[in-house]
Image 1 (cartoon, rainbow, N blue to C red):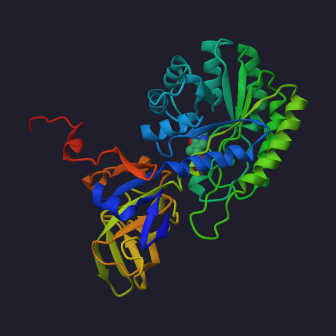
Image 2: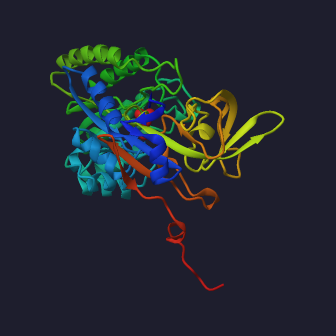
Image 3: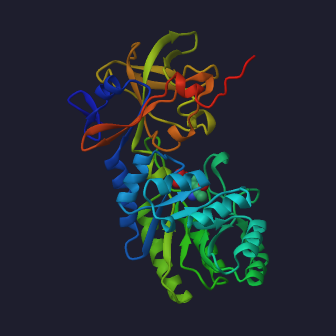
Length: 410
Ligand SMILES: *Cc1c(COP(=O)(O)O)cnc(C)c1O
């Protein structure tokens, strides 16, 4: 978002005008930002056979899936429904990695029938898979290297008590099952969590993967998951993609030589690709002075963007209606009957009722985690391409709330 001639622009479009045209609350996405993040990643890993599988749980609108498909990305799907959405958006089955956790074998079977790559994260499922398919259907195995990533404990997935993946300490057991059923393991996968602060952690996980990989003779790829940290605040520490790209590429090439085959290197980022390319526009309903603070109450809440309340995440907030206003301190809150605080004690240019606020970095886990609590309607979504915004999801209405309800006689 840039301030140009006193107007806040995003992807070349004037945000206040978008709020007027489409109403608020409104999710606004910028295609150019998505594409440049994708390119930043692919440029950092020149020289290795890199494949990006966009983790679509971050933002799963069909238009966004098509944007990533067009620029050459594959897809990481965590449910059979995400697989189906990916196929509908035009991805070939073999471009989709299906990485479910805690699902029934029935759902795995649906993935196999759809022809997608199956990522197995549980020993009992692996055994079931071998029994059912033997050597006929290849699979990928999700390992847990027990590397602690930083960040909020809700988003760490690689530690010892995590429900994700098969422990690297259980590899002998895995080996026995693979031998018994002659399972073809074509990929190894690790996803340590959402916030990796330095490339050192990544490289440590990589070493454990390379060590484990020696036990699998049919590998075609190693998937290093995600964990790229993006800046939500000024001066936030972020993953140095270029440094990681240089170091991991070098080490990966060396590993491929040792292994005796040129493997593909996969990543499946969500947040890194779509977080900065999304903004949630909300309108100020009320300004309320209390003894402790001044509340700016907006026409949205935890039902539209739950990250601040669920993960304690910081999202920068800007009053885009009053760029010249005097700076004052506000606490920005939602309209839900819960303590749904978007940000405490934020310096905003003077807020007046009716002003539009921009909540930044809302592209990832914004709309996809939204819900209808308090019987509130979910926002519309627009995508900016060539400085023009197109509606990619209409705003909900009361009929949508009643759509799945069955009217019985009482
Ligand atoms: C959520 C998830 C990702 C994406 O994580 P980000 O932090 O959004 O990059 C990647 N892989 C798997 C298996 C996931 O569950």
